[in-house]
Image 1 (cartoon, rainbow over the protein chains, first blue to last red):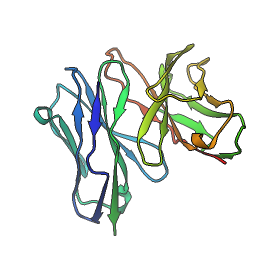
Image 2: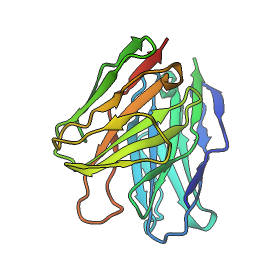
Image 3: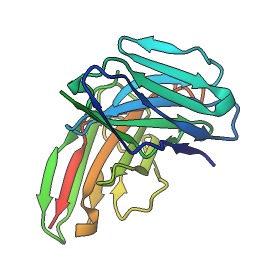
Length: 113
Length: 116
């Protein structure tokens, strides 16, 4: 069985602060994919990144960066110099055999001006 | 990135009514999914389809039904809406380029359903 845990339910920061969202996953498969999605107040889920289990390189995209550590089964997400527009719910997700996506419970990020 | 559409965006309806939530995608994706999202944020897969005439129930039991007569269209129907069906419903689609674990799911804007 697969499981994704996002221990932080809500994080509140002041604009320009960095914020790191934790994601811990469980799977018995050796091949799997990890994802992060953003859900702004408008409701749609926006795809941010996909990482496969064989690629442990960290990735940076603008103010976003991701730290994948297979040894600790974690795939953490950092927003650098947060902005009010970053306020949203962020979901970590895992997909391995069977093609179904398992989501974490989500972390609500509130960036105050 | 997929173009995926859902209508209506918001629906308020009385108990006992039959409703259909529409989902369409224009990318020719084989796989489509319906998720139900609680007010507390958690997402639950309720239906999925791997192609025309293929539909399966997801992890969360749902009284809704789906059909997949055309690749681009995956409507969800509730025969008799109840207040317990009040939720956000998100549709997604994905393409399998060859490996069973590489496709990314792209989501529509969601339908926020309120049953009075």
